[in-house]
Structures are given as structure tokens and as C-alpha cells.
Length: 328
Image (tube, rainbow, N blue to C red; front, side, top):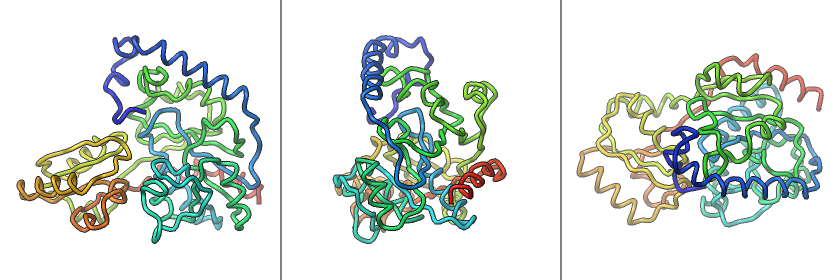
């Protein structure tokens, strides 16, 4: 995935860069098909749900995984979470300890997940599941992994950002798709829309069950930041999400800076941001995902706008709850 999603990914199917990159996309599609044909998929040693997507980044898998874990915990389940540990150097499988591990070891997303529930990382998802099962885990929620041809999940949810949809409908690098939409939907049991999906996007997802959700700023952080002058920065797939959220709170955006997704911040970069905030007489604000990647000594100087994913209609999750009850 490129450092930030290029504009032509959403500029329409006929944009020149997309057409020029189409031969590369076709080659990668062929390699992906061959990889799946050669794989020997096998079930995992415990019930497992995949929260995946079809595009490269920015759909909302991690907040969806956290929200689903909380929903299931309220029903009396004890889900544990799983991540590949993207951006971290440790291969796993291992259980994440937020008090000991850092983002450069286990990845930023794993640290956020570990705040919500016991979390495992591992490059090999089968080995990860085996380690989790051996430790007593009874249910795993995988943040990402829909495209892993070696794993058979019991259920799979496809997370779709309503604003982004499937972009220009082309495969990487000509577009944002990791695989054809039809292929992703064929392995999906339900679609989770983040935001207000229009009729065209819903029709594109066929007759699969739908779960509607929205992402909103966490109340305490929103109240603390509302109306203030800020310098905002983010190294996520879609930094504009943070900037729009702050503007929606009435914040005055004195300056915004976008970094590559999963960017490891250096002390010099943070000092430059701190100086910019001081120059503007503003507060320095970023996302929780970025905050865990900051040097430890810099974190007290930066505020965060946390977010939560809320299900619009929890009854849409009833089939999932019934399946889990039967799986016990």
C-alpha cells in the first residue's frame, strides 16, 4: 500500500493513472489467484470471526473489532482479539502486553486492541490461533485477514466505509482493492457499513445481511477539544478523517499535517510539530493510533481525539449472537 491513498483511487474508473497501472494490477491479481489455488486452507482450533475489508486501509476494521468485542462481552462471551501486528518487528505468536510492548514491536493497532481485550499478534494466523487456544481462549476476533488463503474462519464480516466504498473499483495499485469485490463478498457472511451507505453501495453488496454503524468522537475528548485552536497531525490511511472530526467539533485548524500510514515518528518531527503549535498558540492533537507511535517523552505534549464505533441497530447483530450461542 502506498504511504497515503492517491487521489486517483477515488477519481473514477477512467482516470489516466489508473489505466496506466492496470497491467500491474492484472499481474498482481493473477499472482493472488495462484496463491489461493496453491494454499491448503484449514479451520482453526477455536471459533473465529474475521473482521476484514476489501480495500487497502481506512475502512474501520480496528474500531469495528473493538466495538464487536464489547458487544459480545455484554452478552457474556469472553472474546480475545488477534492481529497480524502490522508495523511491528515481532513475528509472534505472542500475547500483547500494553505495559511492556511498544508499537515498533507489535504494531499500533495491536496496542489499541489490547486496551479493549486480551490480544494476540502473529504473522501466521494458524499458529496464533493455536497459541491462543492453548492459553484458554474460547473465541477469537481477527482484525483483518479476509485475504489470507490459509485460514478458514467460522464467520467473516466485511467492513465497508460508506464514504470510500470500493473506490474506483480497480485492484492495487490501479485502485484500492486488495481483491475483486465479488471475491471478497463470496467469503463474507455479513457487511458492516461504517457511515450512511447509499442505495448503490448497498446493492453492490448483494443480499448479504447488513450491520449499520457509525464512528463518532469519544464524548470526553470531544468536550475537551470543542472550539479550541489546534494543530492536527495524523499518520493513518485517511488523515482527513481526523481533520474533519475536529472541524465538526468547532475547532479552528491552524495547521494540519498528514504523514504516511503507520508512520514511526522521530523526536525531530515531534519537536517541529510542538513548535508549530506554539507558534500558532494552539493545542497539538492526533489520533489514538498515532499517539501510541510517538516517542514516550513526547506523548504528554500531544492530546488525542479518541473515537468509538457505535452500532445503529444492535438487533442487526442478533444472527451473530445466535451463532455464537450455538457454538458454545
